[in-house]
Length: 185
Image 1: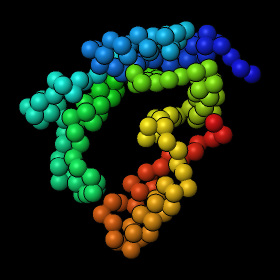
Image 2: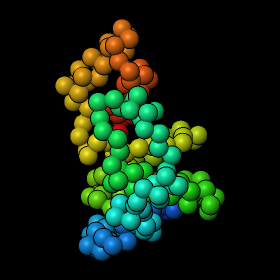
Image 3: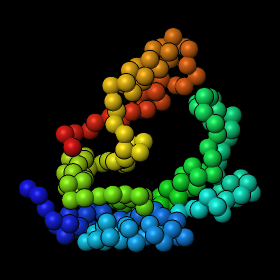
């Protein structure tokens, strides 16, 4: 049965202690778009870390980053850039806010979400299917791309390399490179 934004909002408000949208304070145009896109859904903005405010001192004081450890796992990729670090710090801020407020369940959106009634209905259906002791349920994946056949073959190849000791990436990490379906939604 298809439900309205209002019905879905009621469900979300009953299930989650808080719904947050991570955004950067200076992105006023995104705030307007999100307010339109999530009209009928009660949420609060959480101001994330702006990459333009990051400098090396701030990163050293607020972000645990060991280049050697990082490169051992992602040896073919460059270190995280300021945008990636700011994004990670923003999500850490959401988690800290959750702990500070003693919230048990929060729903976190980023400010580029483009929901529609069908997506929100799937969100509701998926939440209803989760076990009671779930920790994290991640709904996004690499800019909305799917685990296609070529990507599955690439993952399989990396698993073979791990088996023969030809990969510096641990097998457990390779296994988690693609989303795993949880249920029918």
